[in-house]
Image (cartoon, rainbow, N blue to C red; front, top):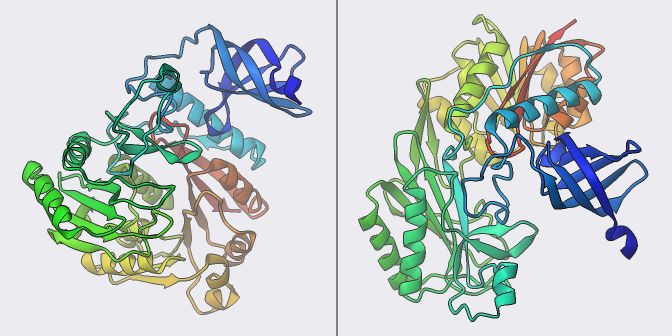
Length: 468
C-alpha cells in the first residue's frame, strides 16, 4: 500500500478539466489520471493517491512544462485558501472548460446526442462579484509549513477568515479577498484590528469558548451593507463598543444585527437574531421587482449573473400571458416573481417554511396576486392528490439543489405533462440524470450554461425540454 501511494507517474500531459475542477490526463497505456494542483495543458509528474482498475487519482509533485492557459493568480492566499481554485487559469479557458463539462454530462449521462448548445454566458465581473461573505474567528490561526519549520514564536494567533479545506478547526487569516467589493476587506480588517487591540476573545473551536465567533457581510446593488455577528456569549459592554466603532468607521453599513450562539455549529437558521442598528434587513431590486433580504435569507450571491439567469429562464419559458406555471424548489420565490408578470397563475413549492414566508411576502411587496406557494418535502407534497386539486401546468420550472430531483418528483412531472420544462441546475451531472428519465416524453431542445462563479469550477445550466 505504501509503495502504491508513493508511486510517481512521469510526463503526464493534462488534456482537459474534469469534475470538481481536477485536471485530466492519460498514461501511455491510455489509463485516465485525475490530478490536483495543476492546470490543463501542464506536463507533470504525479504522485498517486488512489489507484483503481481504470484510473488513477493523484497530485502534481513537479510541473515540467507550464500550460499556455496559465495566468498569475491575483490573490496572495491562492493555493492555501479553498476558494477561487481556478485563479491561475485564463478566464476564457475557464468558460471553455465549464461549457464542455455541461455538454459532456448532458451527452454522456443524459444520453442526448443532439441539442442546441447556446454559448456559455460569461460573467461581466470576474472578481468582486459576491454580495455575501462569511468569515470565522479563531484563536489559533492556520500556520503554513514554512512557519512551522521555522520554529519562530508567532505570539498572537488570532485569525479572521476562511476555514482551511478539510480542517474545520483551522482558520486562514485573510489579508485580502477578491470575492466581495470594498469595503468588505476594510470592514473585516478593521474588526480584527479592533478586536486584537482591545483584547476581545476569538473563538476557540476545540474548547468551545470565547466571544467573537463569525462575521457575515451582505450588500445590495445600491451600496447598502448588512453586518451580522455571531457571538459565542454576550458581553454587552464590549459588544456595544465594537458595534459603535464599526458604525462610526463605515457609513455604508445600513443595518447591524447579531446572535448569541453557544451551539456546536455556526448555522444561523435556528438562532434568534437581534437588531442593533437599522431595519434588520436590506432590499434588492431586479428588473422592477423588490426583494427583502434578511440575515437568514437565501439570495443568489452574484447579483448581475443572477439577473441574467432569471431573464434567460423567463426567455426559455416563452410565456404568452395565459399559462399556468409550476415552480418547483421555488426558494424565496425569485423565479416565481419573474414569471408571474407574464403568466396567468404561478404555483410554487419549497421545503423550507422561512423561504415560503419570504416568497409570500415578496409577492405582496410586488403587488402580485397570481402566485400561490406550498411548503413541504417535494416528493411528498407534489403527489397525485396535489395534481388532482390544482390546474394542469402549461410550463414547469424546476431549480433543485445539487442532488437534483427525487425520482418520484420526476415521475410526477411526467404525469403532469407540461408542454414545456425549464430545468435550472447548479449540477449538470444530476440534471442530465434527471432529464434522461424524461427522454421518452420530452425532447431536449437547447441548453445554456451560465457562469455564476468565476475563478471556480462551478457552473449553472438551463435546459429547455419540449413535450413530444
